[in-house]
Image (tube, rainbow, N blue to C red; front, side):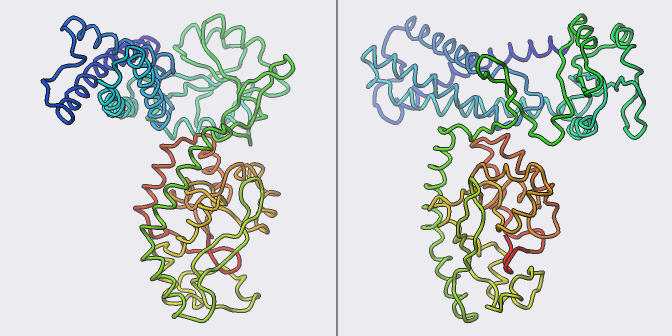
Length: 470
């Protein structure tokens, strides 16, 4: 039933994409005529059959490109940013093919505005329709429709975490039927369905869409694998090895042998790093210009509020574990080293009146735009720590050092979820940082920046080394 529903959904998307592309091309041509020409509206200034055929071919071309780029896949468990990225990629390819074709036909100058407008109009329409469909499917799944029934086979240290993630996201539509194992685990709320030797009997009487083989070293799953293949049930292996590793692994080739790569992030791609960096440079320059009156006023306020430097400089650990000097507006009185190492608390007497105001609205962080421009930091990424804390956390948190695979950010996925400064769990912050690294997309950065903009005041008391919070 699930596969039938997905087939219907994908067919519906293809039909919608076809008509959306046809409508977008027509609308783009009308906009071109309205804005740039005094001639009557037409597409290519040819006969009606040729024009109609061109519309149909453009629609079919775009559907073929969408299929080629893999956007007709299940929405289940996928962030909308990933779907949006696929839509924009498909539209960019379609735009390139159309531009190349019209250039070859020597009519590009006649339709170049329409072709460019087609990219923007069709992208907007497709994103709008997919957003509606995405929200509709999540709404239906929360209410018990379009469910996908899962079976746990075996039990290991990853099982509770896997079950918790699935049950915490009802909009994904996963329902865990229970688990089969050689022993019952009463500490879990999942239903105990019997021993693995009873698997065949269970599969004959139950509807299972997917199975998870939770392997242990002492019980290899060869027989269970064969039984699942016999019933045509797709399965995924979850060994104990992955308990403290990223949620995504990648199969690759080494000297002709298949190997599993346990750490691969989207920003490992140099092209993605390049346009993230280009975005950082452009936005940081614009922000420095736009906020220059605020920066000047803050600098004057810090200078007159208490003696000492305007800018507080502190060594932090950045990308590839390289240290850099991070800038902030000084918000405390200059004191002795022994006192300044104490963390700042709410209402700390060391904070000046101006400093408290700057902290309240995060204006003290604005000089970090210079760090972004220099390449020490990014607008979005895991927050940097001082070297002493890095040495401490890398010993107690297994995946802590992976946050240094990218430039640290002025804000991040953990920070917009309230995990910032003292009183928050470092391991929880690392979980959010890892989720950001594994699921990075340009649209995720945009989302984080917008959510940060509407959350100027930190939810938690500030803290950090040398008396300054993050």
